[in-house]
Length: 130
Ligand code: THU
Image 1: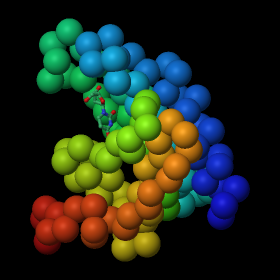
Image 2 (image 1 turned 180 degrees about the vertical axis):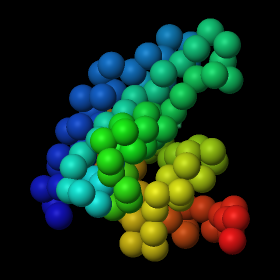
Image 3 (image 1 turned 90 degrees about the vertical axis):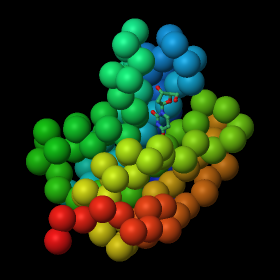
Image 4 (image 1 turned 120 degrees about the vertical axis):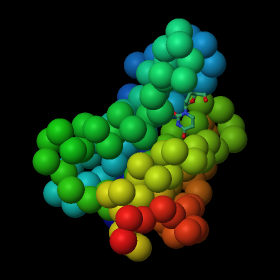
């Protein structure tokens, strides 16, 4: 699993290079290890109409779904600086949609320090339809 995490860091950092963040200058990358064993990456994509900007996690989730992935085994968020970047509230709910109790959310700073948390700790009392 250790080397899977290395793969996620690499994929997220690669995605981060292409982040489009001219308004915040806060370039984020994300990578998912899906249930099919594949890795999907995303970066944040901002917009002049600020609320239309999309987070890196949303891009990675979209790539997974497009390719037929069903579940998030691990998701990593790569921060642009020496402080880890935790998923925003909306992204917590987006991740939860494809998570289970074993899903691991990893946050990595620019020096490759990693913190890990489970879904329930990241979003307790998540909204559910049933
Ligand atoms: N951002 C992400 O892409 N992921 C996060 O987990 C937190 C924030 C983006 C949104 C925006 O483009 C920029 O970072 C600053 O908020």
